Length: 68
Image 1 (cartoon, rainbow, N blue to C red):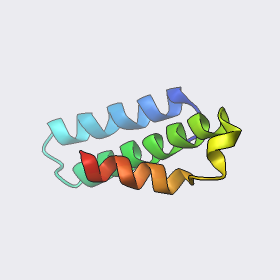
Image 2: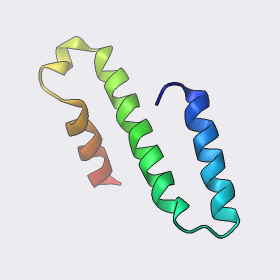
Image 3: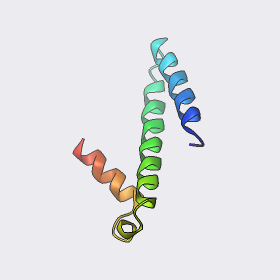
Image 4: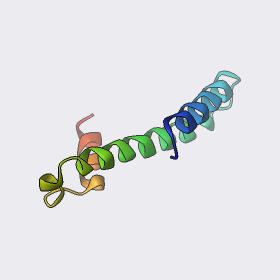
């Protein structure tokens, strides 16, 4: 994801498609949100270099999803 605007635009487009009855857009929405959450986890870990040696972005992301 390049920017928050890119994410927002892609998500809005998928939501419009879903509203028109395109059920396949649900998969894309999940993909977009997963990518966004992974990116946020990566950024957050970057702010705490001491934690970085203990955790990997995908580990944090996966662990958070399993609690949801």
